Image: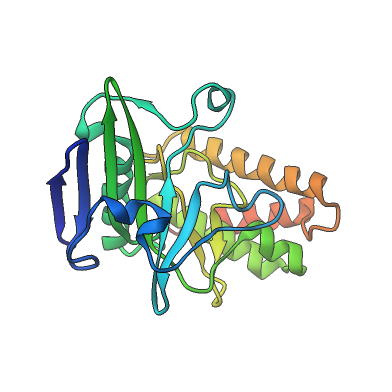
Length: 243
């Protein structure tokens, strides 16, 4: 992976020359691509409308503009306090994804990241390589019932991420995605970190459990039960014991 940083009039762009040989600021808006379509989904799986599929098959990308969520997101849309380039959210996530991808973890490969300074604040964008054939866990279990082997494999995969110290700040049924082979991918690692084992592992499991319970409440036809969660935990702890 070839990391290159180029300064712009208002900030900087970080990109991988082996994926994108040349890049400019136009690539961080939908109009800068010959093809762009919003990511859509059910039960909130499309996020907050800040993500686009861009480019053409066979190589497509995911363009994400960083926006705030929660209570603060009602007051401040997409700006963050500037504390230096090294700490900027898109550069931190880009480098974390790059390290994880190089270690063989199933995460999107980072292509480019950008920040733009606005006085003491900045805005941010990230471009990653689109993973073909994936769908959110929420969508998979909305379509059909998945047995014990499936749920155990999901738990096993999360345990592998945890064993490598991957902390996901918002691990839920939307940004855990499943490919055509049934393998799990982890997306949207904004505010993620690489940490030593600790209480954060249980915290992320609890966050996922709440997410699954929430989508079940939104749609009682979702194929998820407490037994499925127990199967997930069985796979998770079996993987940790054998690590």
